[in-house]
Length: 106
Length: 119
Image (tube, rainbow over all chains, first blue to last red; front, side, top):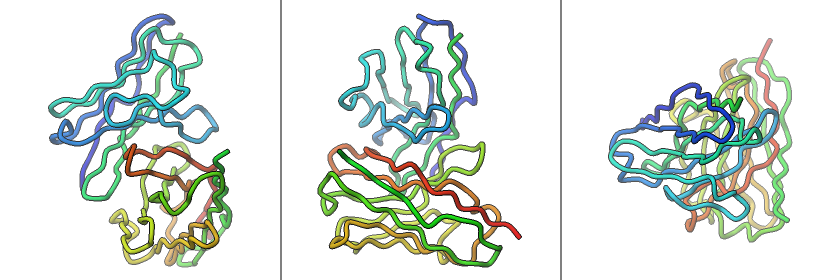
């Protein structure tokens, strides 16, 4: 089965840029998505098809995907961005998720 | 407004069965693939199963193959997950989610229904 690997945690100060990575074999050949999950809430899609933002997602959220690594970038992180972030990709009609990264903004 | 409302969760003994349902509204159900995604307490997201628009294609994570069955009723705008031979490790919050061929992502999520497998 296809595996996606994320760092368990990341801490940044308000206003700094947060970069969360997601690694998988030839991940750059697939589309990567990113989801934000705040405590006690359902996940929310923040990036799809590597770089696209759904309606309503702030411009500070962006993404890239090349080689074996996809990256979620939050430019000028805010306290409200503190959450768990999960990457996901499609592999032969299955949809594995990464293990998640807990982002702390303080 | 898009709404996905899961139901059917509860406490079940190991080896038992449970049927989850997801009622959807606010979008054209027949144009979306549908999935079940679960989250064990304090853990990450795990995709469980998905089904295409007319129910002719179904896929499962290896750990539930042969035990879980996903189905949909397009006339009733509903999605089901029949879970048999339940194990303690199936304990989780189960979400239903949509994904379209245009986004290739899980666009909308329900609030989840909790399944607890314990004696």
